[in-house]
Length: 591
Image 1 (cartoon, rainbow, N blue to C red):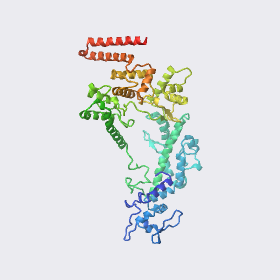
Image 2: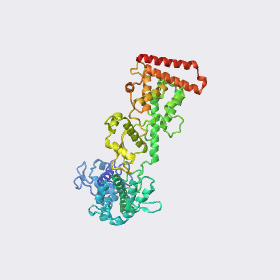
Image 3: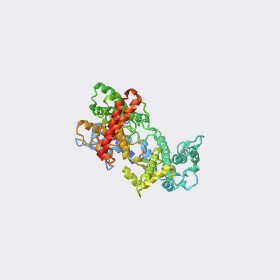
Image 4: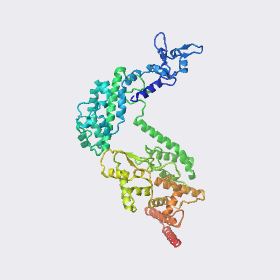
């Protein structure tokens, strides 16, 4: 309902324009259609009962018939009326619109609508005070301070000029916006201040600002809070005003309740009535669940193709695929609409990851040629991708502030001579963040800036966001991740130039494993180049081989400690001697 009169008029003219207007469709004639038949002995179409149609210049219009005669558009048959229709005829047909009376009443309040437009486009507390918008109708009972000064040249015309009898009702609704715990009324001015300034469940703050005299008196140093308080008040004022305009229209025309919102677009809805057809939270959640389920089910075809090297049978598929799909679904939510290869922490599903599904189904087959990391089209739940910088108007959450603090501590420990925090971030993470932005983040997090609502949005870059993919990794992290890979896939070394299908598959497993653990989308060459710069051995070099032998021995001794029947002195001694030989040869090679 609450759109500009020009837009409203255009939509209603479209409604009565055949053959597609909602009240001008010849294939759907009901009691509101311009083609409906009038009751009585001589039945005529509604459009035929209108005596005069005008052309684009406002002159009486006629239609020339094939035989040379002219006739009024209202005398034409339905088919001929549609075939000869001119847009100017819609101006005449508008009076047949079921909401025409409401439209005329709404149009009569044009001055109020123009004022509303200016009022709603005022976004700062200062501009609102300068315009007298905190007391736009010379309301009585407001504090005698400058912020409530009434300016007659910026008055709300609805309550001063057009419908002054509704002024008292408007003031009453603003003064009685809500009740406190003792049943006392709290005004819209006070409620707006509380919403902008007080933390949730802060009863002391609520009691401080609930009196009308305390409204809009929060610390001027936090101008963002005053701006937000004004915006809250602005929306409450407009909502109350919409309800009164609805009463004015309904008093003269009745309501539009005879129209079925499921069949008709209703222009003049009661502002307190939810438009039919809008999804509820429950239906939205169900839609998201269905979307995740469909994505996981459809993606399973690709997963099975990527596991082709495992040599699984159709019978295997009937067991493995449903488990993978369920893991995917259990890792789906609004932040992971395509599901995940691991479940979310709250899930109770027995299988926690694709990796667990395949390992436990057939541990003998699990190797570089058959593993969960061959599946490339899905990420772990923990590796959420950041697509944008986050903006907030309040203090970042504790996790984000902790990230800021950790990066600053790292900066203090590792900074270069004359390097500032911004330069350190750029050098280590490749992100350009201005010094003022970083200073603001730190000040808000450590309480130096203590405002509930900020003047301008704070930008939280990806490196400070929680539950997202890593944005950078140092040599230590890469080494730890590669060591983990070697433990999972012993002797399966990546190659810079793979020569066989088997080596290609090992590279695929290595790449996907590293990406899954780190949250990157890197290629094998990227990792190997970085590992070279970190002097991390790989690809079957002596250093890598010795590391792998150490890993094998550690695994063997760990297993033997749990089950003595596995232990063999000769095996243990053999592995130990192999490590000694490996390390000796490595030293000789380096010498």
